Image (cartoon, rainbow, N blue to C red; front, side, top):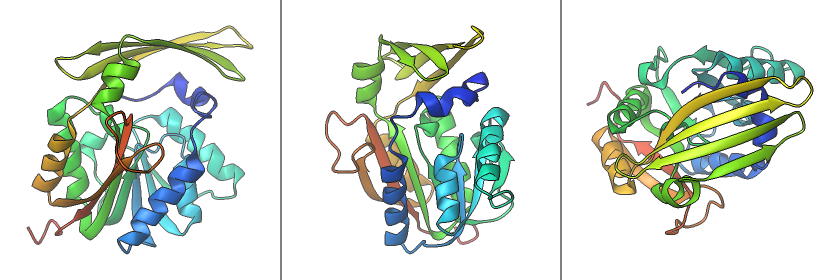
Length: 252
């Protein structure tokens, strides 16, 4: 899935996100496994709030997203911060990921991997990330949980009122596939222009996620609640998973 016009309103509509807390958790998890610098990929970087924070912290960051519109917003932010050229930006589908070399870490947040598709696509995306990961490299990513899809999003509609736009968000949940089909309609307040986009999210049982990570050489070091970063609960709406690579591709 690639956001188009939605990219230009994403930050306004996502203003409740606590990027500071997310950044602190990500950096602490990376440091706990010895990754305090080096090459890091932000997979599905979006408008780049976390991407730029990690770059400012001293990592050499590659920001990767399917959406050119999202990357355009990120470039503007980097320019405003005087960080032009500090972050390498690549427009890529994570199913076709090509980093041209190995990385010490990869992060992926705000349910990017839920958007990748049914289970076979999710597995392929994990395999791609694993291929470029150094031994002892850290893969840290989050997922919306099956609980959130079934109990929070399923069948619900939400109306979001941001400074420049109104967003009507509709969810349709299919229990058999674990898929939520999402329709969004954005109305720009100043012009009255309306854009519509549709996409889907898939959820996966946590044991299945762990099995796939193990299959591609990752050891799961920690699973935390993806919103308060404490222990996972039955009603956790998001997991954040830290996995460590056991070997390089050449060693396998």
